[in-house]
Length: 127
Image 1 (cartoon, one colour):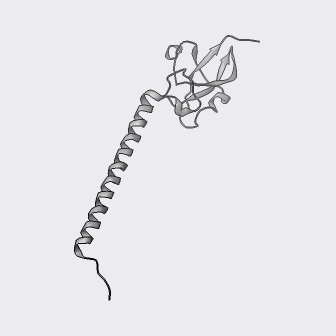
Image 2 (cartoon, one colour; image 1 turned 180 degrees about the vertical axis):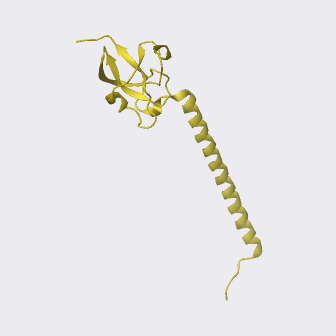
Image 3 (cartoon, helix red, strand yellow; image 1 turned 180 degrees about the horizontal axis):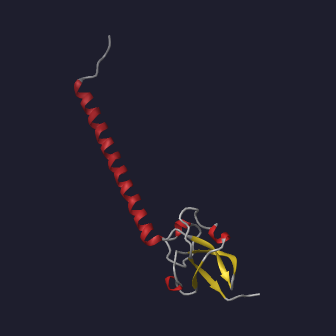
């Protein structure tokens, strides 16, 4: 003799399953909304502006983190800072100049869409 599940019990199990799936769907939706809100916050607040410090391109609003600076006319390695394309020194902040970067400095940037000129930190020449 096989026993069958009464019709009333099947409906209760389906109802409970629907409730669980509804809660899981709500949690997933809220998680997606929170992730999108965080990404928007990071884009507006979390990234540094021109001449701000950075470790990678994701830390800069321009997505260009340079790890070289000018010491007089010679370029030397430095801590990372945010840079951007420019056409004149007036496009850069104080302590920076609009220059044509060296090949070494360009290697700090992504290969795609490298600028012809960018803002670079400039220091007086030291021996």
